[in-house]
Length: 121
Image (cartoon, rainbow, N blue to C red):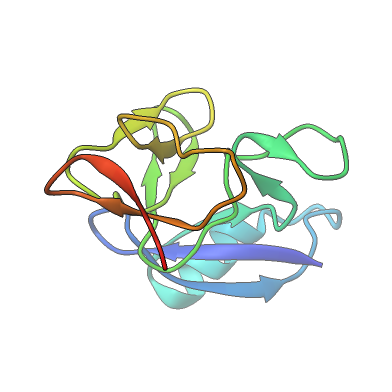
């Protein structure tokens, strides 16, 4: 079972569907794209943060989701930027906070105004 992401004119994912594996000599990115008159890119359900959860070769850095951007130069799906201060992690194609989240097991949320992690009560 394969998954495919449809892109709008700005390379933003509008929908992800389950489709046919590309093992039958058909380019299903082209097939689905022509059927919908939209650009279509295959995405891997098992790829997140630039790694494949089953140890295989990661595919397009992240599993596509609605609102993700497809970066053609990186051949990667990038999630929406959560805060203006966050920067793109080039290796994983995800957004990192300017300071790492504390790892003490507590609950935190990002405070964009203060550019810091605040404790959640």
